[in-house]
Amino acid sequence: MKPTEIKPDIYWVGAIDWAVRDFHGYVTPKGTTYNNYLVMDEEVTLVDTVKYDFAARTLKNIANIVDPAQIKNVVINHVENDHASSLDRVMALAPDARIFITERGLQVIERFFDTSSWNITTVKTGDEVKTGKYTLRFLETPMLHWPDSMMTYVPEAKLLISQDAFGQHLATSTRFDDEFSRCASHAELEEAVVDYYANILMPFGRLIKAKLREIEELGLEIDMIAPDHGIIWRAEPQRVMQMYAGMAAGAADLSVAIIYDTMWHSTEVMTQPIMEGVKDAGVDVKVIKLRDTPMSVAIT
Image (cartoon, rainbow, N blue to C red; front, side, top):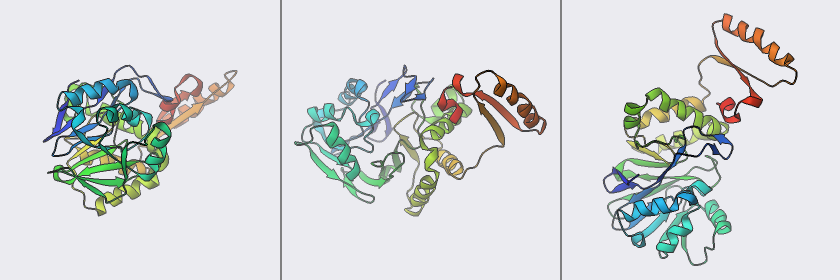
């Protein structure tokens, strides 16, 4: 895919992984994307990299816009391999670029790479970098979902680059929620949000509620959310934030999942009258044999 301008002079330069079906134990039948973003300003800035296998693709996308050697700043919102493992490839082309990362993130990349020649600045919530007409404001989000995690907010563009939050594992040629809904369905997109939340962020509901409150208290105006996986929320950024608030609060439709395993089918036989009883009470029910079902599907 070619670069996509998501805001004036801000571009998606990521990669689409159509083939991945196992994302470190998470079944991904629809693939995923590795999103990162290039800010074309007085100081050219790259926000995140991509999984190492796709480094050549993101570098080609960048080169279609600007010589990568012109990159002055690199922001690393999250150090997990699918976001930061091609950082050395970027730095080889832009060795004088400044890297902005959390203190905990720095502790990790120092184990991954030889950082002795890199210009690294650690940042915390509220720190800012001026790139020209744009400002990058950092918001730490520890344990959402790694200790190093943070988001980058661009107030002039009302853009939240949200790292793993608000993402989905969807490989798609469309970049935005409204485009995807025209090509597929809004329900499919929301199902992908729920699936992603269930498998990546569900244990951290209390932290998510606190972070959503912090975003509100900071008065961040957001009309676009750009996550590191899946589509970008251009039409309905508030909708996905509402979904997260509901899921973090434990809101759910009334339903029952009977999850079982069995050796000689006796437990399997037991599931049937339980299922019938739930159904007779007018409640939706699913019966899931765990050994024959991917764990991520059962969790969702």
